[in-house]
Length: 292
Image 1 (cartoon, rainbow, N blue to C red):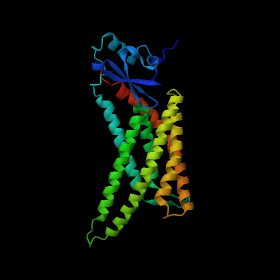
Image 2 (tube, rainbow, N blue to C red):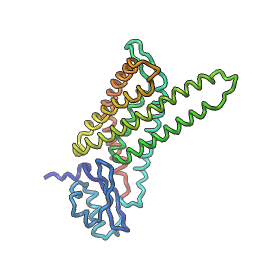
Image 3 (spheres, rainbow, N blue to C red):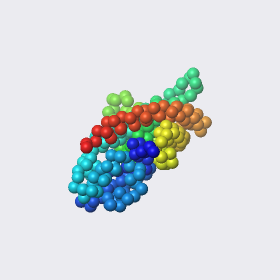
């Protein structure tokens, strides 16, 4: 009989211990929800069947020592490398999002294919990859927190840009009127992207966690591909109609939508490969490097 505990967790993950209360803290992987259990109750539960050998070993050490034994799962241990990676991913998400939105303010016409695109279309799909990685290794709850962090940062930039356009410019500065028009256009793009970003990324995160639960954490390519494909369709329609409604005809907007969906679908397929690479790197440099 094969011992499945060598495989990765599919339902539960040990987060840490609270020695003062003799509690174990366990995360439900599919939702990111954290539960606290008495050690005596945990060792008799079915949760133990889903944990890895290392996690089970630490739980029994804690249980039989009455909480006196120290382990790598102490809540007092900050696990700095893990949280630094989370911070880096959140910052990367923010940077990609802002750069994609600013570059999306310029429409580009490709005569050979008779299509209109924005440069942001080549950066924005990467945000889905970052959210997938956050969801995969930190759970749905922390992935949502990162999404809201980016959204709040976007609102701050939107307000700051609007404020700069209110101040009177130098009369001899020839770019004053051009600057105001660019800021107005960028602000409308940022506003449209805020709505589409939150909704599409929530759909992406929710679907990824559900598919992960249904497949027992197997088939990473399937959940990354399906969740991203659904999300890009929603994002493309919301963003284009909010950003360009009134300035372009509906037919022109639909053309942009279809082109964006086609390009983003290609990125959805491409995202599968860095997702597997990220999983390998995360296990090697974060999980295995935790202090013993």
